[in-house]
Amino acid sequence: MTQKFFSTDKIAYKGPNNTDPLAYSHYNPDEIVMGKRMEEHLRFAVAYWHSFAWPGGDPFGGKTFDRPWFPDRISDEMEGAKLKADVAFDMFTTLGAPYFCFHDADARPEGDNFAQSTANLNTIVDIFEKKMDETGVKLLWGTANLFSHRRFMSGASTNPDPEVFAYSAATLKTCMDATHRLNGENYVLWGGREGYETLLNTDLSREMDQMGRMLNMVVEYKHKIGFKGPILIEPKPQEPSKHQYDYDVATVYGFLKKYGLENEVKLNLEQGHAILAGHSFEHEIALAQALDVFGSIDMNRNDYQSGWDTDQFPNNVPEVALAYYHILKGGGFTSGGTNFDSKLRRQSIDADDLLIGHIGGMDVCARGFKAAVAMIEDGTMDGELAKRYAGWDSDHSKKILDGKVSLEQLENHVLENDVNPQPRSGRQEFLENVVNRFV
Ligand code: XLS
Ligand code: NI
Ligand code: NI
Image 1 (tube, rainbow, N blue to C red):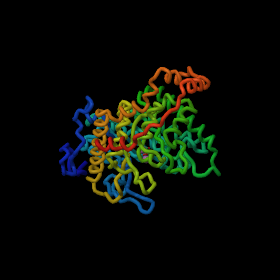
Image 2: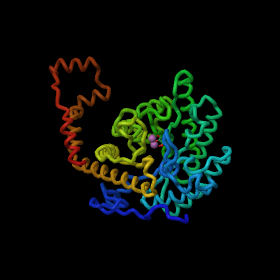
Image 3: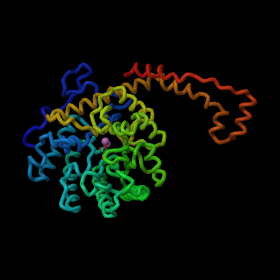
Image 4: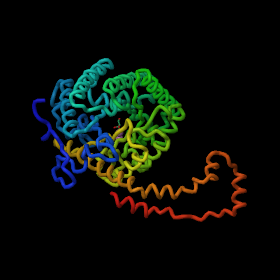
């Protein structure tokens, strides 16, 4: 790189009274919390696509960002891709972000055919490998973009044309190979256009079977190449299609069960997608944990009024705190992490806006995380929960759950003991007030 892109090369932690926009006020990677460095708890990742490939368009207007690696600034697309990688790794190290995530299409130019696209990808993967070695930045997950190109307009694995299914399978293989080579810690599948607009032209049950088959092939291939990280599905209820097959955690779990994959595949949960599905983020996290399929998170919010997947940087500490509260209660991240699948607003056109967006996101997550830790260490919430269900600790109740008691026996129990349960307060306001002590 000849010219510096950002105005600084290191974002430092300056503490809660900091006013420097290019410094952290709450995210202190080295701070020990619950016996571990904060960096190891939160496992932040930068998303390659929104920060470096997205031009700032909306349905009413095109590009607002003027990046030196965009095709109108540099005619050799491969040179553009290399410059993009330079700036991307410069940003990861400037932020001190330990991880990144990418799709094939973010990183390499599309070739004239599949073989050329793959060759382009592999050239960039060589560059990534070298830069990862030099910087210590790691890959949280890789994924395939099976939704932007017009060949995928009717879906990838759910396409009515089996040759699109084949093209998608081939692309998935190349992206899994790339992720494996770069020691990616997970592999993500977001459904993209796996859904439909109208049943007038859609055979829903056939499309689900196609998708189930593809997912099984992905799992078979993962074992074949010895990829150790989990395959993660990212649920989303709509956008781009009206009805997406991966609607939410509950829907995806049903899908995994039907195709025999509930022990093979876990989930990558995005806050904005939870909101689109009419759920809170913590609901999706807690449900995935209850079903033993929690994997990783995309920590980007939606605008509550617009109803779109606006992919904004998080800025709501109480919401983020409850998300981490549940993540921590489930034991914290293993292979997963906190990926910012977030993009700038299209008027934020300066290079440093990219840094500022991520700094804010990381600070909000750090504050929320510390609040969650304080809630756990305080123990009031857990104590209240334990009290609420204490009745189930008795031997008699345990027998019920163990399947040793019938309906008739319970009738006898009620009659013999003159059982007449009295309602007890759910104490929601009290618990909300407890949460407010920490956020
Ligand atoms: C889109 C998704 C996408 C995935 C990766 O809404 O969030 O960005 O995270 O394909
Ligand atoms: Ni999204
Ligand atoms: Ni996402």
